[in-house]
Amino acid sequence: MPQVTLTVNGKQHTVAVEGRTLLVELLREKLALTGTHVGCDTSQCGACVVHVNGEAMKSCTMLAVQADGAKVTTIEGLAAADGTLHPMQEMFREHHALQCGFCTPGMVMSAIDLVMANPQGLPEDEIRAGLEGNLCRCTGYHNIVKAIAAAHPLMHAKAAE
Amino acid sequence: MYDFAYQKPTSLADAVKALSGDEDAKALAGGQTFIPVLKQRLAKPSTVVDLSGLGLAGITVSGTTVTIGAMTRHCDVAASADVKAKLPVLAGLAAHIGDEAVRHRGTIGGSLANNDPTADYPAAVLALGATIKTDRRSISADDYFQGMFTTALEQGEIITSVKFPIPAKAGYEKFPNPASRYAMVGVFVAQTAGGVRVAVTGAGQGGVFRHADMEKALAASFTPGALDGVSTPADDMNNDIHGSAEYRAHLVGVVAKRAVAKAA
Image (cartoon, rainbow over all chains, first blue to last red; front, side):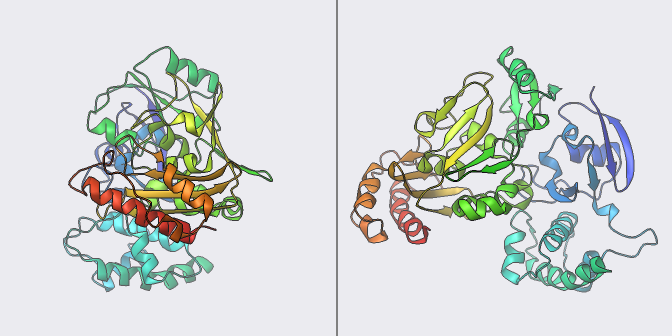
């Protein structure tokens, strides 16, 4: 069985996996990090998005072995140790950017990557285009877009500190 | 997904060997098509050979060509200052493949080896007359694409890079399926050293194809108006719940004009 060594939310793990084990299966079933969701399981919905070496990727469309040596961040890794929410999480709460909440982990992870990749600013149409790979079946998009727009200056102010 | 043995060779020769000795072995590039295929149990490889350890990613530019390593991701082509400067149409095409998370993993070599009939890169490669380099030879675009999901690649043959000649002018336009965002019709037009070339993806039953009548019309005048009256036969078009063959044939004309209008 292949061994995978990866760092998840700052903690290193070495796990034996099958070749076919998906990254999301490793996270949820081996590491009990169930914040990352499996929605469509067909690479469409983005509920499974995590950061691999800082970039948003669909963990249901990636083998665990492909994450060998990688730094992975999941939704559980965003808040500070004292429970202070990440600015994106805080703005999702502030703007009520969730209804059932199923898509939220993937939305937040994609949104953080989108904001960090666009320091110059993020007009509404670019936020909407940037969320192309994340589906909210409650269709709660308006508030998600508002939350991301509100988080942009907060995150870049924090990054500049 | 069926289980398989996993290998990650560190040399091209080892990768070729792993794929050549076993006809059920399959290569893994970015996996954005292959992993969904595995999950649906549409493939049952004995061994999956991961090509990410071969150093095949990277972009190099010369005066007249842009060469992209097979394992270069869509996001890296889209963001490359070199590609934006020398072949901006290709950076724009790469920026609209799938979604951002998919572009962080999907690769040009994977897309071309798979030759999905609705993929974007085949249109660019065919219209620009690019050359596909493999571990053993160079293949011209006109010889490479051999029908839906079919290419000139032999068992175990690995794409190493794609060399694009820089055109005088080129444009790409796609009409994405409103749900999947795959190209219902995508048309790539280019004024190349070898004349005007037009490649159509998404529409044809046989995958990407060149449109000879449009090439002739655009050679006379590289303007959207030159395509007035140039028809596309519906016979060989895809015909499914997303659009009839006649609808797609009509779209080819509309989308081609838009591609010419935005060509730069």
